[in-house]
Figure 1 (cartoon, rainbow, N blue to C red):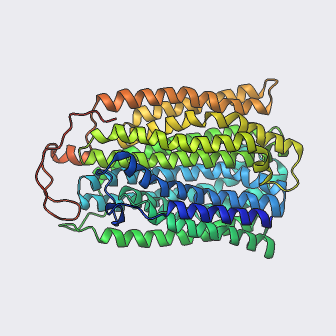
Figure 2 (spheres, one colour):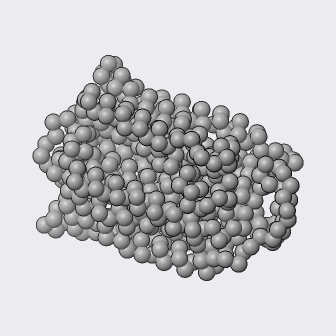
Figure 3 (tube, rainbow, N blue to C red):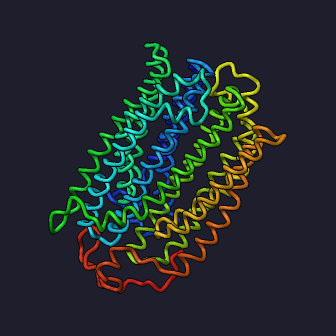
Amino acid sequence: MRDRLFFLFTFLSYCVRIADAKPQTKEANTLNHDLTVGKPEGVLWRFCLPLFGSVLFQQLYNIADSLVAGKLIGENALAAVGNSYEITLIFIAIAFGCNIGCSVVVSTFFGARDYQKLKTTVSTAAVFSSAACLVLMGAGLLGGEALLRLIHTPRELMADSLLYLRIYVLGLPFVFFYNIATGIFSALGDSRTPFRFLAASSTANVGVDVLFVAAFRMGVAGVAWATFLCQGVSCLLALAAVLVRLRRLETREKPKLFDRGILGQFLKVAVPSMLQQSFISVGNIVIQRVINGFGSAVIAGYAAGVKLNNLVITSFTTLCNGISNYTAQNLGAGKQTRIREGFRAGIKLVWTLSLVFAVSYFFFGEPLVRFFIDKPTPTAVHTGVIYLKILAPFYFVVSCKLAADGVLRGAKQMRLFMIATFTDLILRVVLAIFLSRTDLGATGIWCAWPIGWSIATLLSLRFCLTGPAKKTDLPPTLQSEGCAGKPLSRSREGKPEREKKLDFSEPAV
């Protein structure tokens, strides 16, 4: 256990040095970074690198929980945490929708230099997120046991799964408002500040996990309370930094606290993103129910494997959120010509990452699975390894889908985005149920992932390359005020710049 923790801290220290490396351009040293100027590939890579670092540390919360549960408590504790995790993903999905909705709309107004509407967007998103959070907390606290029974949680896992779930639900306000804060930072072109907060709190979470479980003997509750405490600190620090940053953006009039029109723009992006993540989570719950029928050893093996797979998918998703911010800022500034180049740069970025993960998981899956489980059964190890071997080669495929989805979200082409997403989900769930009943057994469940990914990727790429490229989707700032083709009178730094017409003649991808 000590060797594993040392490895984690060494790896994370290396990630901090890479992701927090000082930028080489003068522009990148400002507080808010303009994604509408500079070479698209360089701009996007510098912006997305800290986002990837943030993903690693965000996943560290879940990995640390699983590692400590599996090594210091036992296989059943790991299975209980993994079982509850599928339900918590629904809550995270709603928070993620608020994050991306706020981020895309704020990016658009930031690119158009409309700081008054930018601030109104922030407060409107905060009001909506507060209401959504309260509803979810009530549902989680009152209906948690029913949800666990719905997925056929084994009797020996029920108590620990319910305990972990209830403590997690108490920390939902931290999850929601941290996501809002990071969405604002990303919209302003600053991916470095939230990375620093998350790096500190995630690293601390590892130590607090060990302290609560090993020293205080708190069991699964200790794992949950450690996450609650560290996420709370990270959230409060991020909110304080956001408020300071927003005060530096000067406006002529006091912004509105709430605006229905802006709420509509926020929901246009947020709701499809929420539905996407929520239905994926619901689909995962259905799949978890199927997996639960194969016993606790298979559940534990899947719990270890899915943590590693979620690290990959979350990495792709977060990097592609950066592509959404890049797309929205450039649309807000009327610079569609840069978006196709940014999409190509994004593909290079996610493929580089795909190569690393695919090789690691395919050839070194067994030690990675054993990393999470103390004295694992052969069935648990075999389950996790086969799961990773089946999925790893297809990371190149799903990464293309998520990059295309990033452009579609940034351009507000949400209908097309939803079609591809639901195609993937429906195929995965239906095939998982069907194939699990064949001679393949549990292995058949894992085969559903590549099939769903492949078909949905074809749709996303087609929509990305023919939808936004054929039809210009002007940002709401320009549409509502009729300023397409109007000059921008001042630069980001407040210096006068020459008036020039905005060019909307090029395709948006």
